Image (cartoon, rainbow, N blue to C red; front, side, top):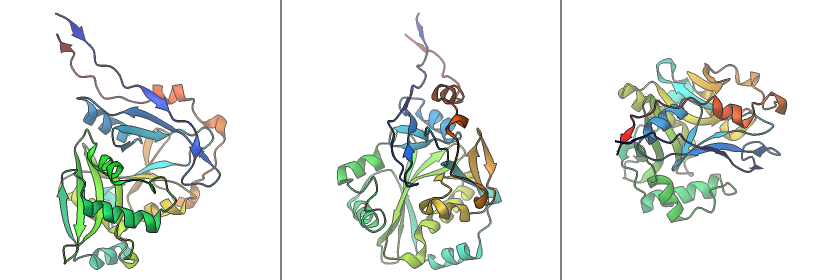
Length: 273
């Protein structure tokens, strides 16, 4: 009888490239593959430590001279909508939510292209073709859903690729009709995901990264109950003006130390052969 132990995830670092959030900065990511029978447990554990999923990869910013990016999530129990957010809910009351398996459609891709062309024409996804889009939606080794929102005429208006975690919902990527700015569809999808989490007894909605000094990410600070991952733990969001996008490089932990401090899920029982 032979016993074999599961192989621990291997972590890697990307080469530096221009930061998409702060002009003049360079970004670098720490990442690992998400695969195998322990994929869901690994995704749950690392999501709780500030990692995000992109297809079959989990990543977290690990820049050499900046630590501005802070993973953000909403504590559903602590959330109370503002007056403006309540207006957004009323304004979109006619939308119908439908959750489906992670399967890409032509309607989704058409909406995705309209959204990118109007909002992120120079972004990293600007050249994504239909096959790459399908991979983004469908290549998931964990429990994922596509949450679509359609109007009264049945027209697709907004979409969120959403992972279902042990402790919440993670909004992996969202896009929406760019010609309805007064509807605040991005905000509405977050508000609706808070409601979905509440309905299912899930305590958190993970939003990705909040970056002080980045206008693109500023809207996330508008949600009450927001927490950010800082110093190895989740902490309630302070006044956004108290956060700085500056940090001395000598105050950042070396990569080896960052990896050593990652808490991995319990190992599965040894397989037998």
